[in-house]
Length: 319
Image (cartoon, rainbow, N blue to C red; front, side, top):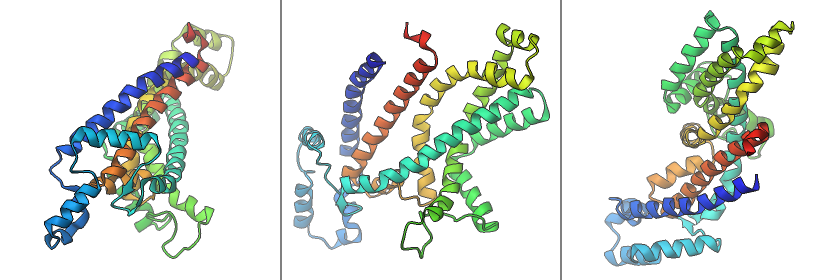
């Protein structure tokens, strides 16, 4: 375990440096001027001297390597700079929004894993039946549907037409306090859409894996001993099919991060993912750089947790 963690940490350091260096290179070659984006319409009446002074205060007039070295040094010391689009320190924006993203994404992961295992196992158990064809066809159709389309369809059906759930936000517009029940009601649609949008391949993978395991000798032996079909599927076939599933879950983390950005934006969920879109539109590089770094860390941590879970589930892989 410790060797895996140390190896991944050693791999993560050059990876993060490469990502941040590429991020600075892209920003330097971007056709958008962050100062003019910050000024907006005021850029038409702002004197060149004022624009040059803002550019100097933000360090944009320095060579690219000097900007990158300064940013890395500030990052190590915990100084993340100020967000131009939020007019607040980047650290304050992250601290305020990150818990809401972790809450929504964590609930979506739990729902995605539980739903994929149940639905995929049902499809494998009833292979060739109408239920199997419905689940398989639904998973393929869901995979081809964009996340924002699912989100808009959910808003139209459950918020606009049926009026069962709120359309977005963290609480009702007139609320001045955070009521847990109100927050939970506002979480239903974004969490469900995020979980469903990322579960298609997991459902199909569980189905195929359970079907293959049901042909194994130990499963046939369990049936010959007279065990009921539910016990054979859940305690024998599903357990054996879970090991490759853990690796696949780790590989889905990048798409989960991308899906969270779109879902938070459509549902106006106040997390760091929706802040990424605002930072990109405003060319708010100090905030965008830290959010990109957090996204990369999430991918590395997701793959590490998947490897550790695989090692715990099957100690034979240690050798």
